[in-house]
Structures are given as structure tokens and as C-alpha cells.
Length: 113
Image (cartoon, rainbow, N blue to C red; front, side, top):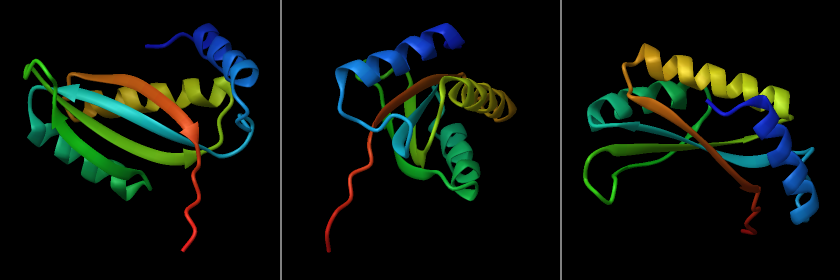
């Protein structure tokens, strides 16, 4: 689990190192690991029901495990991200998934049609 102090540091760094509006909507990616792609696919179905966008399930480079990647556009503070991390850890445990590994973040990219 990522400590709240580490999340606070992450937000501080994003504010100083990027031009992103860290206090607004950002594209958050979340990652889960397990040797069973079936478990990850079941978890993905649950996450899709709650609004997450399924990106993929792929095998790790060393072929020892699989990774589920989902994304969601959300606005977070260090405290709300800490809460989300706890929720996703609990969901991984509920589905018997080996671990919730954490997240990445980037700006929301709007494509013109």
C-alpha cells in the first residue's frame, strides 16, 4: 500500500514538474496482478460496472503473472486517492487477486471528431 505521505509527495511533484491541472479531472490508471487471467477478467467486469474503462489484461514480460489495467477520469486529492487505493485493495482481496499494485496518472486527452 502506498502511504498517504508518499501520495502527498507525488501530488507536490506533479504540481512542480508538470503543467497539469492536478486539482481537476485527470486520467487515472489502476493496475492489478495475478497468475490467473480469469480472476483478473472477473475483477475487470466488476470494475466496468462501476464506471472504470477496461484497457487490457496482458502477461508480464517474465510470463510469471498477468496485469489488469483499468482507467477512470477522476479528480483526486492525496486523501481521496488514498481512500481509492484502500477500496481497490479490498476489491482485489474480495476477488482473490494477488495484488492491487497501484496507479499512474496523466492528463485527460480530448480528441476532436
